[in-house]
Image 1 (cartoon, rainbow, N blue to C red):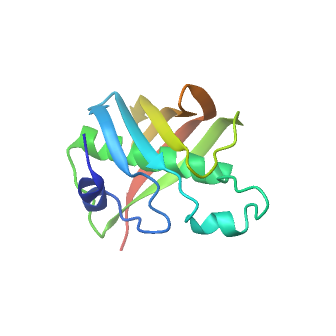
Image 2 (image 1 turned 30 degrees about the vertical axis):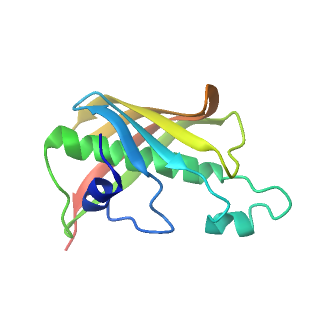
Length: 146
């Protein structure tokens, strides 16, 4: 389990782009379960949509990618530095099944499918309660920057 203080040590993201509030469980090299509390105070709700606030699908994918990054770092036993950046390398099969609204708790289950030549491939599923909200295959890579 990781609380917000542990997450802040691992991810470079900060408000309003840090999209993981807590890690509920993880198994190195296998899977992670994390959560995002979705509140009406999120800045994207101002314009998406004023009459019916809905979390953008791309932010659900980003939340799963941030969870995947946390799993990758735990798996490799590294703490990222200012010289490392974790990037999306691809997204396949993204499907959105249910709107995510203020007051929802988005629970993400991300499984490491493959790690080859520095490219990590994950299967991500995000739910609100028992309802599927989003699913996708995510590919990510870590790069050293100047």
